[in-house]
Image (cartoon, rainbow, N blue to C red; front, side, top):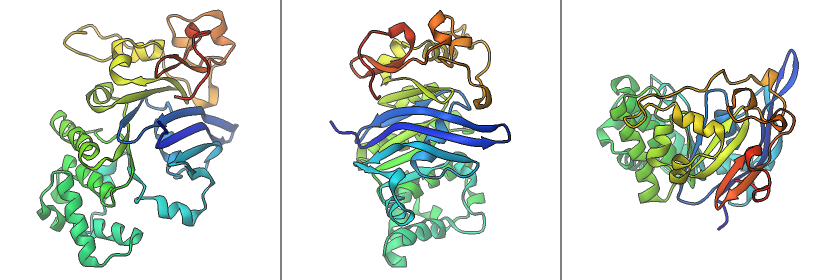
Length: 324
């Protein structure tokens, strides 16, 4: 099956006073139609950078150094500004990190959604309003919300408005960056159910970025685990959670408090900075299973089981190098 969205060898760098530093390194993954694909990892691992790269929202001092991002076979990184504008919102939409604070405080919800619709498709204001009401209904909100200002809504409601805004034109893919951060557990569940409903009822593919492994377990079909700008492991959610192969993935799951895991254990040490990446496998300074080769050579991302890709020297010789 051909992927709907494919990221190939994506390299993003940043210019600093100490020189140019790479912040994502040869990132590879594939997203298929009508799936919810999760991107997990600690803060600073490059999750949001990947999303912004796919959307071509990277700004100075960061820049996309090389790579490809294919949406329905078309390379987004090779498109001009005008062609890219035709893709955005109609084929590829965005729920930004901190989206609760992205709505204008001086405009009603109705105006913000209709303005976005009119900016991308040729419809009348009446048609745009009808589409806006439909977008609100699709995320479980009353049409009355259209006549409210953002300050009249709770944080969770504003988040759902942003999700509705991103789905107004029924895009093929939504990139949701930390869509449940800073919400209580009740609103988290409502918003996760909203994303799942958009996939089930409208066939929208969702790429969800969050550090919360429980959220990935709740709704994602497959998960990509990133560490220090690289992909560590990719696989179907249930097998990955039941039997994590990469030591970093195991560490993330062991750190999640649960009824069954009353004694959660955090990963020792801290994630490295792009200004001082470790040599070889970037996780080796914190890895309980490190070997001599780990500090010298970068492990390739390999398919070691059906639809399970791992970048770890523990699995050298199993399968062949491949994209996840």
